[in-house]
Image 1 (cartoon, rainbow, N blue to C red):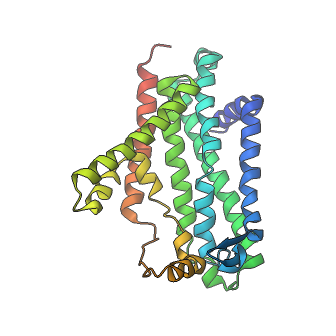
Image 2: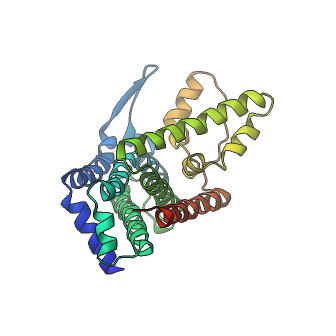
Length: 279
């Protein structure tokens, strides 16, 4: 395992573009802390983000993981490029000539995906603790670690999405086309949702339940939007005369199972494609 990780690290760090993207990703994640200084004026109401409970424990676990998930595209580019470069520069064939089996090759890529997901999760965990203890009104241990399921959901979100990117990179071979494939797949899932909403006009909930089994939709359902949890949003609703809506923000076990299954499917398909492909 250590040997496989070492091989992948040398390839990634030796590529300038990958190195820049990885460093940029973690720098941009750090910018979440700047949210604390943002002032917003809506409908004549002026408020500071940090004063709206955004950085209060346990809510901060939700908001930070949700924002971080939106930035995962940076590492997605790295993973797709990582696979495409194997074909472009012939390193895949050379690794196999040097004695690396196709199974070990896939294992090295999966380990890289897991390390990216784990590294990002650890980074967000530490940063959230720092921000929370700096701005939260509640720092009791029982409150601080209440919503840690969002950290687990964040890790699974990245793992599943990066596994899909790995699959796309192996299937398409070229990074630009692989990224295009991912975008088209995402658009297709939304088109399916639109068609189902049109078909089941009297039961939109059924349409959402059906598409929740699709890979990218299921991943996006792991961490629901947190904006409507905070008092600033409720103040805006009251100002507009809207009734408060009861929403479910929890991480659901059935979504976790669906995403886990899709992760396993994409890793398996990646191996099958590589095993059968004539290199």
